[in-house]
Length: 82
Length: 307
Image (cartoon, rainbow over all chains, first blue to last red):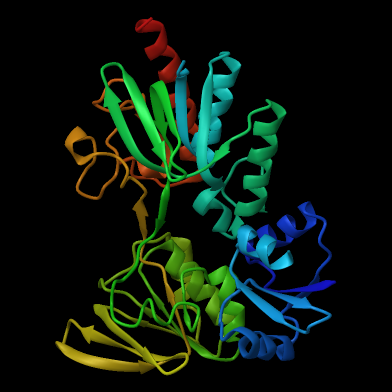
C-alpha cells in the first residue's frame, strides 16, 4: 500500500490540478495545507527542500521508502504509484 | 491516406476553445493540439472581470471551458507543437511526440508564459525562494520579508497579497512609475508594510540552500544595493509562445507576437492567431474569447473562398 500526502496552499491552481488528477485516478490522499499549519510548512521544507507547492509525498508503507514529487506531474505520480 | 483536416487549433485556453466551439458548430473536421487546458489563465488566481462570473478563479474558468468543449464531444490531443511547415496549400504540424498532422488552416492560440529575468541565481533558487506564482507560494512566506519584481498588475496584486501575509514586502520596479490599473496602484501605495523601489534593475539573487537576498542597480545613483529577503516573486510580464513559428514567415513582431488584422488573419494565407499570442495590446480573457471566435469565423470564410 502507498500513502499519498499532498502539500498545498489554498489558492494554488497547480495544487488543485494535482488533487483533481488524484481523484480522477481514484487515489486517496491526505492534504496538508501549509497555510493552515506551520508544522506542515516546516515538514514540506524538510522533506523536499522546497519553498513552493504542490509537493506530493508517496510513501511505500511496507518499505517506508518515500518518493517526493515536485510540482504538477501526473506522469511522475503515476510512476511513483506503481 | 493522410487526412487533411480543415483546421488545426494549437492551444486550448480562452482563444483556442472559443475557436473550437465555432468550428464545431460549422461541422468542420478539425483538431486541437495542446499542452494543457487553460494555460496561463488557469494560474491567474481570482478573476473578477469576466462577464457572467462576478468572482471566479482562472482554474474554475478553465474547467468550465473544458466542460463546454466536452459538451460538443471535442477531445483535444495532449501534445506540444514544435514545428510548423507550409507546403503548397497545406500546413504540416509536427509535435514533440513525433506525430505529424496536415491541415488547410491553422489557428495559433498558444498564449504566453512568464518572462524570466535571466540573472544569476534565478534558476538555482527556483522554489528555494524564487517563484513566478504568488497565489501558490506567497503563503509560505508568512511573517517573512519578500521582494516582488515588476511594475504591472501582476506585481501590484502580488504586493497586495504580500502586505496581508508577510512582515514586509518590497516592490522593485525598473521604471519611475507603475503601468498597472489605477485602483491597484492606489491600494499598494496605502500599504504601510510595502516599500516601493523605483528605477531599480535586479542584477543577482543570492543565498545558501534558500534565497537570502538580491542585489539591484539603483539607476538614479548608479550604485549596486543589496536587500535581504526570504522570497522573490518575479512578475515582469509574459512572453508569447511562438518559437515553433518560422521567422522567415515574417508574421511576428519584435516581441515575438503574431501580427494579426481585425479578422485575426496573418499575412500567411490560412494561418490565423488569437489571444495573448497576438500583437493585440489587451491581454485579457474576454479579449481572447472574442479573438478566438473571430479566428474561427475567419477559418470558415477562408475555407469557403478556397474550395
